[in-house]
Amino acid sequence: IVLGIAKPAAAIVLLLPGLAVVKEWAYAGATFAWVMASLSAYLSEPGRVWLVPIALLGLLAVSYFTRPASRSYRTFARASANSGRFESA
Image 1 (cartoon, rainbow, N blue to C red):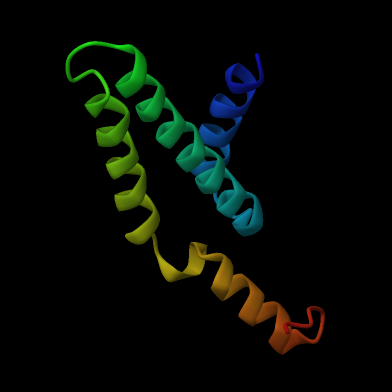
Image 2: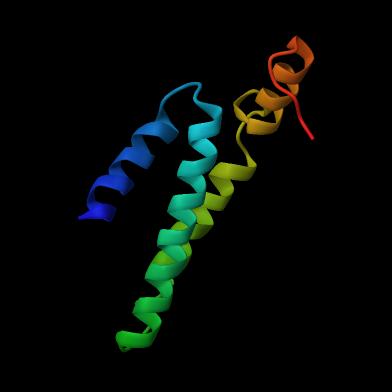
């Protein structure tokens, strides 16, 4: 039930503009889900079914690393720090 709600919510957040901090959490949650899915499939299913979650994880990684800098949390944190609203360590 949790993944049935979390995965569609993460997909919606990743498609919406803005929400840099929430996007980072969506990417992290999707990464954990795909890693655990591949592990589960590898340990329980015969054949190469476990490659499907690995392929989807690869697509997620491409999406994460090729996104524009304006949609990155680091850019958001830097801009907030420069405006005096956010203190970074």
